[in-house]
Amino acid sequence: MTALSSRPVTSLYVHVPFCAQKCEYCAFYSEAASGELINRYVAALVRELELIAPAAAPRTIFFGGGTPSLLTLRQWETILRAMERAKLLGAAEWTVECNPATVSLDKARLLRDFGVNRISMGVQSLDEKLLDRLGRVHSRAMVFKSFDTLRAAGFDNINVDLMFAIPGQTLAVWRATLAEALALGSEHLSSYEVIYEEDTPLFHQMQAGEFSVDEDLAAAMFEELLQRSADAGFRQYEVANFARETRAGSSAAPANDAPSAPCVAPAAGSLPADVPAFACQHNVNYWRGGEFHGVGPSATGYVAGERTKNWANTQLYCEQLEAGRRAIESREKLPPLGRAGETAAFGLRMNHGWPFRQFQTVTGFDLRTEWRAEMDELAACGFAARSDERFQLTPLGLRYADYAAEKFLRP
Image (cartoon, rainbow, N blue to C red):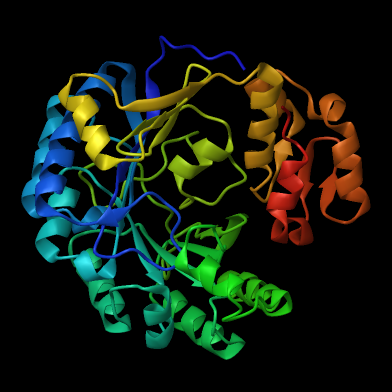
């Protein structure tokens, strides 16, 4: 793929590594909050944002973590004012991940005032026992209160994040959680099957035989998710992501307003025609092989054909930025075919797969020649479907998307 380094990068990811406590399943880089270290991180992050600003014109911004909403009003204002000075405001879609235990009306209003227009709320479950099992610090009551707080602050593009196949979760409990979560009327739903990552407490508990994985139950939960979300007006557009075309109870899709308006919708042509209006534009850019800057400890970026990864160590991250340089641990420039294979793998997670013409435009390679055998194999076992225009995974294939995607990777 040919990347034009002179063209400003339009997607920005910011990693906030702090949490009230580490969740049992989490393999992302995060650590317990410490006031002194957070202030040092904020100062370092401001420096990194200033360094990337000349090569950035964000149309999508995503603050992930960790728990970005854990930052105080003063810390948030420091970051937001710095972004304003660096001319990094005004994104068409600006998402901040929030934990229900850390959302206040003042904080929500501050974010809205600076142009944040999408919130991703980490609910995970609405069952108190399962929330405790996962190591979450919020209660089910906090979820409903926080959702109302976000609406009161003017947010009308909210994602609710759920997990299924949690140890101890029954199908009946999952159905109850889905019913309550869908009744909230959010614009977007993300729902992930628990993955047992090494070096997480859940993985070690499974290895020790404290519980076993029930694949049939997980598959039944996934089917329940597909059916109930569709009945509630959501359309699946990626393995774990579902979005509305219009708001619940409304006939209107989001309007293309200015960033300070209640909701900033996708600009004309900003989303592919085969995804719903409230799909996450930032993530669609990942799945379609787009460029993005990544800042903060452990953050990855992809600019001008080069992948970078920051140090997954907040102390070291701060030291590097305090010395006036990016805190980049590694750089990697994949060969063209390797990058194309990676792009194919990510894009196949989307329901509509890859249109052949679009894939060739993005990567310079033709799926029908370089990956013909792999496509034939997946189609033969019912995991994929192929037409004259595109290659895509079937509903069965989407259930095993990681297995299918691996076949497209190249050394």
